[in-house]
Picture 1 (spheres, rainbow, N blue to C red):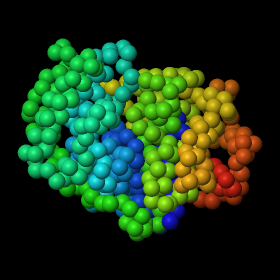
Picture 2 (cartoon, rainbow, N blue to C red; picture 1 turned 45 degrees about the horizontal axis):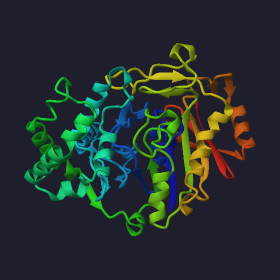
Picture 3 (cartoon, rainbow, N blue to C red; picture 1 turned 135 degrees about the vertical axis):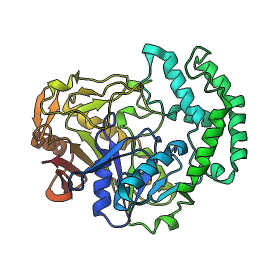
Length: 414
């Protein structure tokens, strides 16, 4: 078995869906494992020849090639949203994706979402930049002891589920709303008081729980797969522990931690981590963005079709990379953070650079435009050994992998 983690190097939106889907096409018997965050991810896969394009939120990127998805214990599925995503997927591809979930995965509820939206509305100009999908509120509720697992949703009747949701609303949500400053003038206050919201939510998630097959994803069960592909959400600079950008972070571990922990528990190892970055930098939502600039100041960079302007995160923001040291630093920091796990001790590190087709095979840095060859040399100077070129995948463009030694460098080019 070979195990690979795909991780965003920056603030998300780097091209993780491209990487995971490309791997799904070329490796034997893969399983995609979703391990952090929840439905807020938006990983786009497209095929120019077949003229289709799909944005993956909870379904693994690569499911269109028949690859199943597993929701790990650390993933927070939104069962309310899942039904529409599966319906859209099935309409486009003609089959229902195979979705597994660990029984202990903790679901995001409708009140988590409403609290999130209400809190951001109450913050006004001081918004944290949340996408409004309830992830932090799901984390806070679980920390307070009010847990709802995927298995509980499956085992309870609709009436029993409604009863549990009402109990959590009375015992936890009302006080949490006060703490967040959600008062009667807040546009989400009445929805947090409305029982129809709970009834409709319970009905939908009971229908959608049937889309999941609940499993004990132990080592014996995983042995049916030859490759485990860990599909991360967001990016390293949004990790909950990256305090430099607090409070504009996501409430999950976006790097190696979850894959390493998952494998450690099962006596398995992580063979490679692929860190994905564009040839420039983007950020959606509020918070610091070093070297920020207008998109028009980045020659060749076109409009992003996935990250459209929205109420919660505004318009996609653009920037140049900082220094070479800053370019490689998040990868080193992430690897150093999991040294306690034997599963990640010998993990090979790779960097996948996307959108080079927009920038003429150059990367945009604060100091100016930099050739890929120079970035490669900088990687080698820091201990990487980039040797032989091999074809990795072919879509509209092609992905080339430069593989060698303890590091790999993956290039997205024309």
